[in-house]
Length: 447
Ligand SMILES: NC(=O)c1ccc[n+]([C@@H]2O[C@H](COP(=O)([O-])OP(=O)(O)OC[C@H]3O[C@@H](n4cnc5c(N)ncnc54)[C@H](O)[C@@H]3O)[C@@H](O)[C@H]2O)c1
View (cartoon, helix red, strand yellow):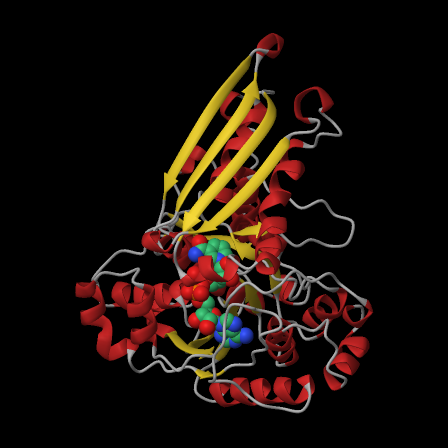
């Protein structure tokens, strides 16, 4: 691999396979996030709006020294699929087309929806693999039937194979509802035990894991936008490696947790102590309705709780972060729809222990924040699949930037600090493209 100079601009040459042809994106769940993603991609393609929030579409990457003035767009630096080459299909347990689902989610305004209607109406979901045991608040009839989970997995595999015939590469994206809290059991330990569990309908295998198994069996990358256990089990990590089908962590990092992983590293960098962090949310979309069920809420709560402890490292800084009282509430409040409101109250303390408070009130739009994250994850996972150095390592830890619960190799502490995650992501791109890493040391400017 080498860096070549072309007309004064340095570009990377590497052994990453080019992104030729169509990229098929199979979305599990045609709800608020996925319809905002699909409609958004089409709106950008037609020049109706800009892909704000997406690193793959708008981000740049510095190459070489600051004095080199070489900061190409990421999309020009590494070979990413072009939006014009992205093709969507979906599964859902409701028959609504992407247009009807987007109208129901009411994230996008009527004018934009009307313009995109002819396109969105063409995306009709395939029947889902769904079992209400794992998502109590939903009940749909557009579902696949099979005697065993193995049969259901085979039906999904047939869907993936059929779609593969129409495109050049595929990524599966879970943007479906949050399932009940599950912990790994014996069935999740090896590919063999998992496959046996599919045959025997093991209760430990949730619907999301049947999709993930189908995708990974077909050597297709799998992105998990929800906090479900899904691929965070040894069996599916092994399958991911075996079939060169990348996976990453889980749960899109969008509103409150994004802010948390920005603020907490700042407190820690300045050694400001924290006594308590109270986070509350109101939201009224279907996701909020599903999370109103205590078992689904527990899955989300666990995912949201993790970040602070990892960032603060109370074992290293007991004077600052021992016993931080961290509380998270999510309340379903229909009048707000997708326009979530989050409040954070942080009780912190400074020099000599004197107390202070910080209040954060984020009036965000859940799916508007999630759509570019989903897009970047899909495009970067497709890049990983075409990159010899990344395709067979399984977990793509460099994509932790986008996820509330980063997944790591066994025994490795996950990195939650957004700025470290951002540096890791960009250095991974530099590395796979054969460019020098940027360490921000900067002594060379003072020689
Ligand atoms: N919006 C955000 O900021 C954000 C952030 C992090 C995570 N998430 C997660 O992303 C997921 C999607 O969020 P949303 O707001 O679009 O929810 P949503 O309720 O609008 O959409 C989810 C869709 O998934 C479908 N579904 C559920 N189980 C399915 C299955 N087994 N197969 C196929 N379809 C299935 C539902 O019918 C629904 O249409 C949720 O798990 C949510 O927790 C969202």
